[in-house]
Image 1 (tube, rainbow, N blue to C red):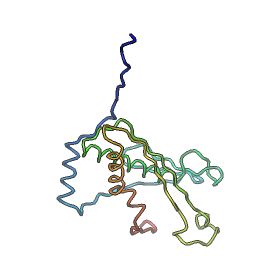
Image 2 (cartoon, rainbow, N blue to C red):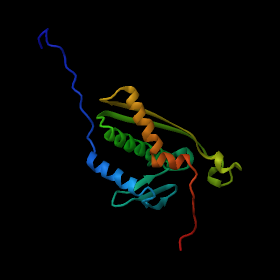
Image 3 (cartoon, helix red, strand yellow):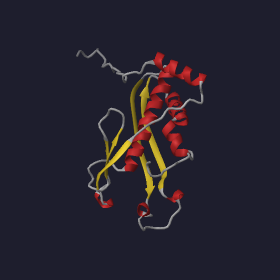
Image 4 (cartoon, rainbow, N blue to C red):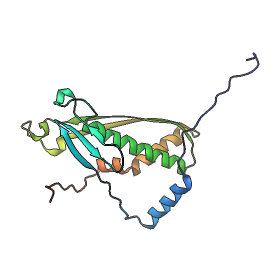
Length: 183
């Protein structure tokens, strides 16, 4: 390189989603705001705390507990899987909102951590606590995002996606929950 040639920065962008398809999906939602889909998972215990959850045509999602919680530590713990689902949903939303606003992203990473309580030992003789005192007590998400927009615009995209995230809203809002023996 000659002394007069300045180094150039080349930006590569993340693989985009289909904006036209996204706009059609959004129009469908505006036309039927009460529409719902159903997610289905079949979970089978493999032994100890290790489970295999079958989702569609994919390989099973394996869940376990760490050694200090009497698992075999062969896979992420249930709470880690919940955070993974939240991170995935937020990333989908951020990507969708950026696409809608025609902002190309060159980097998107989410770092999630949550403080979880289980003093009741899953109800197996631990502390007598209320459901509100168990599970995640706080979740923190730090988003690293880069693209062809200002920091303020990128933050607005993140906040907008958070507001409309189905998984984040499932965690924030009470939802009817039914459990019972299969027929």
